[in-house]
Amino acid sequence: MKLPGQVESLVADSRLVKERRGQILRAAVKLFSDRGYYTTTISQIAREAGVSTGLIYQYFGDKDDILFLSLKLVLETYEREIPPRLEGVKHPVDRLCMALWAYCTIVDGLRESTVLAYRSTKSLRADRRALVKADETRTNRLLQGCVRACVAGGYMHPVNEYLLVYQYVAFCHAWALKHWALRARFSLAKYVAEGIGLLVGPFLTPKGRTALAGMRRRTADFTREAKLPLRSRRASGG
Image (cartoon, rainbow, N blue to C red):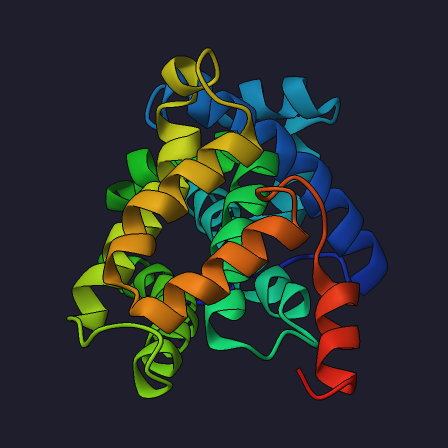
């Protein structure tokens, strides 16, 4: 019996499977986002991807397979790409701000996929919806760890970590979901800076606010990378 997370391919070459699936998934995400999951056909995906319908069935069993991997791709990208942005960043407030900044940056590059995740997760089979939710929960735990470290270090007042993290996730995803409205008022950097002011600043203790002010200075209010200065500061014992 096929496991919920298993998507079988008739092609054995793993490199070719990765390449072809990526090509097909990019086309599918565009169509699912523009037209909706139920009204998009395999033939339309094939045409958008520039391949034959028969070739798609060499890499996917059905349309549910395509949607499942499309959603897994975006959620796994969050999980994979946020931690490297935190390497060398030790101060709890810096780590929290950097995690939110990284999350928004990744969402900005995956706006269609992020919208698709909100719109079409419910269209998956129930067992696969559970897997997608588990992927999202792992990223949430990363943010929750950042909040917990701020509280433990005395940089943030005690707070409902679980609920606050969902506010952070909603904020990051809103850059994609409401981009049509936000882009006229904010650059990505300005959006991140304003969001951190609203969703991090009010919960900080005095020393936490001092740390946030330093983060803002080093990053020119979240317009440039701050990792090298942070490493230098740590090496000097700051």
